[in-house]
Image 1: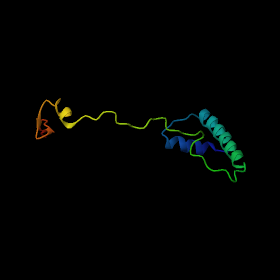
Image 2 (image 1 turned 135 degrees about the vertical axis):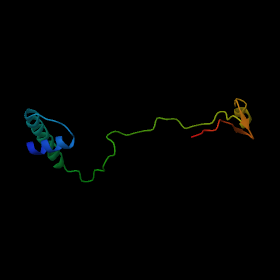
Image 3 (image 1 turned 135 degrees about the horizontal axis):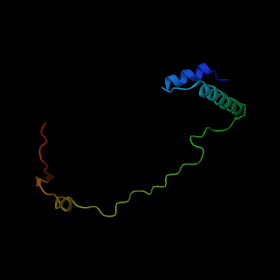
Image 4 (image 1 turned 180 degrees about the horizontal axis):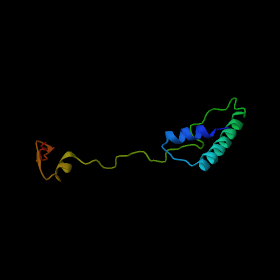
Length: 94
């Protein structure tokens, strides 16, 4: 069982202000949750491999495939200002 003092301590750490009513309520609710966890700990899991996720996670993204690769000349054709094969941009001053 979780005590009211423990709930108040956690609330303080979380910077929450709880009324006495809320402290009582959360103490009971957290106690019930811990009882359920203890009940789950009694289940024999020998031979069961831990799961990183409850359902299989499959990447649905397609592989990147290059369909058309632009040449450097094609890309530089759109540059408003270029110099020695590079984009020329204004100098940034401090």
